Amino acid sequence: LSTTTTTKKRSLTQETPSMKNVEEIRNRVILGEFGVTNVHTTDFPGNYPGYDDTWNVEKFQKNFRIDVVHLDENSMEFDMVGIDAAIANAFRRILLAEVPTMAMEKVFIYSNTSIVQDEVLAHRLGLIPIKADPRLFEYRNTEEEGSEIDTIQLQLKIKCSRNPRASKDSSDPRELYLNHMVYSKDIKWVPIGNQADVFADCCIGPVHDDILIAQLRPGQELDIVMHCVKGIGKDHAKFSPVATASYRLLPEITLLEVVEGEKAERLKQCFSRGVIDLEDINGTKVAKVVNSRLDTCSREVLRHSDLKNVVKLGRVRDHFIFTVESTGILPPDVLVTEAIKVLMAKCQRFLNELDSTIME
Image 1 (cartoon, helix red, strand yellow):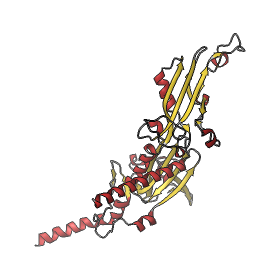
Image 2 (cartoon, one colour):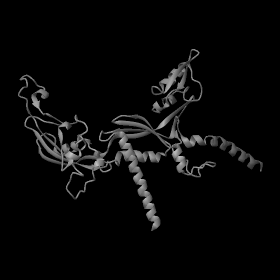
Image 3 (cartoon, one colour):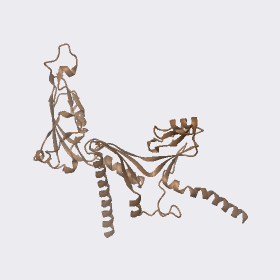
Image 4 (cartoon, helix red, strand yellow):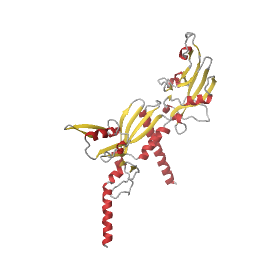
């Protein structure tokens, strides 16, 4: 009996410290010297005694928030707090592959005497982002011809010739030839039906004017007609509305003891600029964490034997820092809104399927 009692006491003693760390296990990803711990979501119902992890709408609404950190016409950075990694990743994948845009689908080459092969030229043209609001167009039926409600027609017609005013001694192609560099600015919009009236205030065409398509020499020409349709990145990368869409967890850096002098200087050098600052206290430089958000989590500090035990590196599990860079087709804030709509539609479709199954 005494042996059994002793064993139970030892097991209770071993369990007690771990229970103190439950909050850390639930809410923090810890970056160690030889690995990363607490990477899996564990706050599901019944996993921790004394914790009610049953999903609740009111609790979610209280904890969930979106904070816009930076926004301009091409990029956006925002914090999404209070959600699981599965939802954050679903949101990222929707941004990449399921928000529709307009892109070139059919390329009719009537003349191409340049050195660029037809298929290579068509591929280059297809990847040029087109400035047109996809919300104003319908998906095209592949069995029918394009119309003003589902197709945008563009034309590229250009011919290279010699510049009669060029100097005889010049060897610069920019001076010797006219139209020898074909850029995306040479692509012109050809309205179909009533598109000229409907999109009178829109400037339909390539997002950027300086995308190089081909180089020509005197006598070479391009005569091409392109049809743009609505599609999603899941079908082809040319329809993807973002140059990049990514997220990272918010870094958390905790100093476990006071770090002074030369040691503080070295600690500052281990992190990205702006993360650690030195504060002058009675003539002594003391390290303090200023902005852990700027850290790239390189774990450089763990290489120093005298520093690795004075700092604790972690990440907040439910705080996602999103970076969205648009290709220019739609503003990044509009893309985020459209991605949320797509996610909501997916959820509604799933609920409808459940209802129909229950009724059957």
